[in-house]
Image (tube, rainbow, N blue to C red; front, side, top):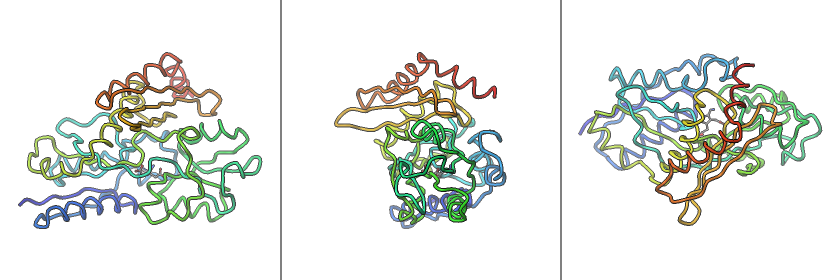
Length: 307
Ligand SMILES: NCc1[nH]cc(CCC(=O)O)c1CC(=O)O
């Protein structure tokens, strides 16, 4: 049997995710040889600027994709939230694993719930999606930049730079930091990022053996949900970091897809929802995008890139 070289970023969360894929594959194929290859991406090097300013999310995957194209690695493990809509020629993403909790967590050493925050409290996040929705709930809050990996962000909170911060529940759980979660926002309060909580595996489209080996890791339900969510981004042209949220869930035998676009101040929030057959995931995503466009999503997003 062949060997699979697994490309990953070096952050503790990325490493956890890569080892999770390795251990799962090893459990299924005890004979398979698996190797973890750690790489540094541009997004890991530039830590002082908000992601939106330095070119968006592709920054965390480009070097891994380069490794795949050069045949120095065979698969790349990504947080779906960080994966751009377009793949380079020759690469594809056939596997999306079972989703962790997709929601955002309120993390604070003093306050149990965001409604307990005092007037004008300082909240750390560099995500425009989190920023605009937090401000819609609490216009008095002061949102301050917060970058770095999960551990760095928590130490900045502990140093007293912020009264609270917001992080993905999934990342905290994977790192064994669930005890830091004071409160998990629901989808009405803070619609998650497209793909949040789901891991994807990218590989060369023509690498038949690898494609066959990793296929068992795909979770069809999560895959359909993430396809629906990513279609919103595709139709809105949200390739770089913009205040867009998207969340698909299966309710009974139907799929519900919700989307959100806002201005960074959270003064104008557009929301849309579509419900229908589970096997119509991309169509539902398109319907949501369509409704958002009708409400003026393009103008909102354009105003943002001009400022
Ligand atoms: N922006 C970094 C990032 N990319 C993916 C996750 C969480 C893990 C996931 O979505 O699966 C995080 C950390 C966070 O947002 O708190």
